[in-house]
Length: 332
Length: 249
Image (cartoon, each protein chain N blue to C red):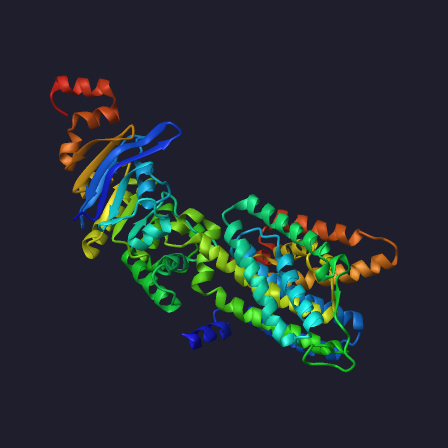
């Protein structure tokens, strides 16, 4: 059984050749990127791109395949990020021990919230996730033990340190993030062929019919939400050691949740490559355009372009860029 | 012991009794028709048995187990399958994948689910359309896919909701023949809600008639067709009176 699961995760044989080639090109690009492009800013954007891939791939499970507008990914990121940061700062626990704990906290939090929130449907669910995110953020802003609004700064080590994942060169972070994204992609590849994947798509299409086919809708949603929490937790743990600093505005912010959701929707929610395409477009756009325009004193234009894109795509093709690609392919 | 046993079932929607004090029994291997004019409470009765509604009163037993108040996914796991008038699940999935969702009810192994799904598609004669997408198919084929999906959950009792609505006479005939074949091949118990008499009359061993939320008649198709109360419910009192005077159909 385990070997089969692994085989399913590693086999991309059922995808069209063009997708497989695209995937290989993506891997090659990620592998050689730090050796070709030496600019610090570019490398930072690349790492952000990878983090957002991870967030997006996770959100795509519940938001794309599951069709649930969950706008609380940031709180899962934050839960894990804070757990890792606190454990390192207060008890000096190695990163490799903190991370599983951080992911666990994010997952448990997802389970508890999911268990109650999935009693709600549609817009009510979306609003409830927003409300919970805001509550968490306020809580962390006002909670002194976790640094309050000032956030937490990790102690700097004198030499590069593998145990605490502290390096001078971004290359290490780049590859670490890349490994996380690859794990996420392999998981997605298994997921889309799995029972859970099919059941979730059935729920998205028609809950009534899904229920009549023996699917425990509530439990499937909660389970998926937990997996989403795992992805966000991994991202959060990485974020903490990469930036060495977190505060409630960077990891708990509603803006982050919305960014993750919109990015996935633009790329194509409910498809395997959608979140990656979304991140590939939006993250560089956001960072470069933001920096370029900001440097000229024109603030906010990048947000306008960004909003325009969201509007055009949602009006023209609700399944995002991947939906456009699929349509063109089916026509042929 | 009856396969399904409904005792004194009552369901109220804000003061309107959609079902009142309905009792019925279905034996293993039977085909039972459920007919009645619009608003008679047929679908409500179905939904109560399957678990979409919780009955206000009464007991539903399946295989001698009390399943009153079970959720739909639980009744399905007990062995009650159902189809919907429109059952298309997803335009993004192929016919085979749609049926696999049903198979996944009993197994978590993708390969087994796939095998079972294609077997069932052979049974409903859709082996040519396995790779088609739901939205590309005509309504008659979609209905068959719906039937296949319900069958894939391996029910012992299959409840069919208006399986012939939207079909032309020829398609209806084919559907009836298909149902009969499935019934004979698998010994499956069928409970059929239907408007179209041509579907229920030839295949049912027994017919239950609802009107105004109450069971008004039960019996063999032939007797039901001549039953005063049924004709009255369906065609109005005037027609029934005139018919009585003439003394024949």
